[in-house]
Length: 509
Image 1 (tube, rainbow, N blue to C red):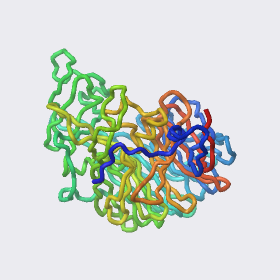
Image 2 (image 1 turned 60 degrees about the horizontal axis):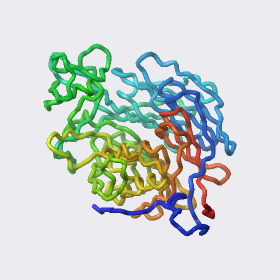
Image 3 (image 1 turned 120 degrees about the horizontal axis):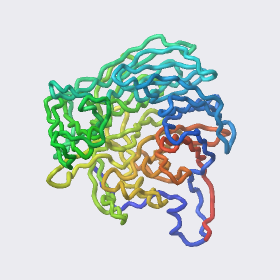
Image 4 (image 1 turned 135 degrees about the vertical axis):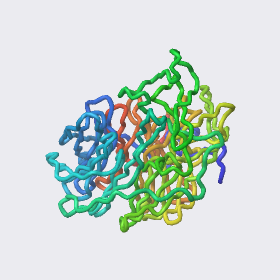
């Protein structure tokens, strides 16, 4: 594993300030703010998807269960054309949307809690429900093939329940739905395919002190999630671990100060129930799909033609210099070793490489000292799509460039840093590129992939606003030969648009 210590990269406006005054820098890349759409809500704008042919986008709001259709045709302006209320029953949540490549149709997936979720095909013109089908538990992402003849849904199945009689925790298994469509965007066939056997897979890594999923579970059966819970019934809320039951034979603990909102489910090497499909990258020919399994630090390889999960690529460990202390003093000279645990995933346009945003999801519960193996690589990583072999990662470039722009979140230094979450890949000037959304830094980062063995951070764009923005869904589109990025910012109800700019500029004081 290559180690990056104190690597200073990320040629950005701020980074260039160390050059002599008035020195002209040519060929600089910038993410230039173009416009900002405000939904009218204080949060909830989560996933955005573009139809390149018509320069429209669909935007989901998980708080309201609404879908906005946006017009992207005019530079410097993004406006709403339509707003559709999906009228979801209580207990259901809109989790993702995708625009059909050519038809006036969009797909929406709905999480129905303890029941199977569903896929809805709707008109982008009037919101009419055209077709629907049941999928798996907890659908979390949907993606169309390039020709629009198929779509895939990642059914995460992450909700846990507790059987008070057996004192046991349980959860539905995640799976992947492959849906075939006719020429009008209606459903011809649907297959929910189960995950492959995990009992003999190689390379699975568990931290020495154990890794855990922090999950909300209605442990006492009152229909609510208590943020503090008297687990041992002694009348006090103490900062201590309490044995609550078991999950597949392994002890499950809770801390009374975190209550039902933070019950720790142990990550086991042989549990299919912990395979929680998250995001999907679909090959250009739609024959293969790659699905992140963030909680187990893997990517599932899917044979789409035959409807089968072939196996798993282990994402391995990222190792580089980092700021590990939330103490108000930022220096990237402490070593970090961390399970990558990617969230977002994309394929380079030629289908040769997978790129992942290595956010992290699990937690450690070491009681007798610091766990040496952390969660979340703080990196963007490149893998060979055919073999799953690691090619390279960005080391500490992502955290460094956020620091250079004054948006590095020091309060997260002892956790997962600036947290790369979403990612999109595209071709520009004949070369592959990626943009990564930094959830805790409220920014997007442009990464050059001309040499996949040396991914290079070249620019950062701050999302407008002073409050927490938390970029979630990303989308790329072209207009008039120029390249643009959209960022759906779930914590402030906006969508930001950036133009990718290359050209000379002069530094002035």
